[in-house]
Image (cartoon, rainbow, N blue to C red; front, side):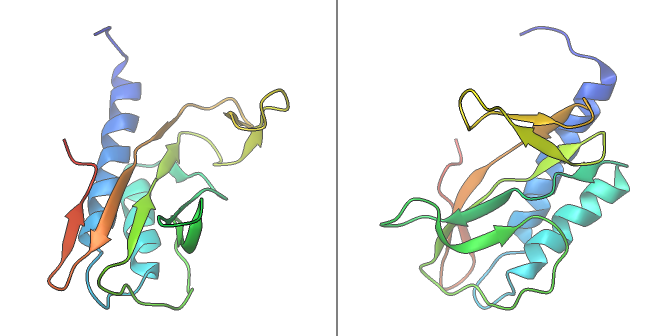
Length: 137
């Protein structure tokens, strides 16, 4: 593995912490908006910005189905029901959190201000007693 700057290491570490805090905010009948609150708190604590407009999503029969998991602080209603499976995908930035989509592949994202960003992701399932991380190694 190569050597990275302390600044990059801090960004990656904060993003991992944001994902962990978001997972800890999950459980049966907990509000979905607790996820965005947890991610925003970690980003703010480490002086990073949550990339706006990106979200997690439900996993099931459809691609990117409901529920939509907002990674920013929000007031959206809804509670997590046992059996629900979804992704949490926080992306933190050193910059303003805005991005543009690469027109050549309509998929790759670039920070609009050229700032570095990092993203982490897990898929979780809400159980009757808590949370199971399905993508944990």
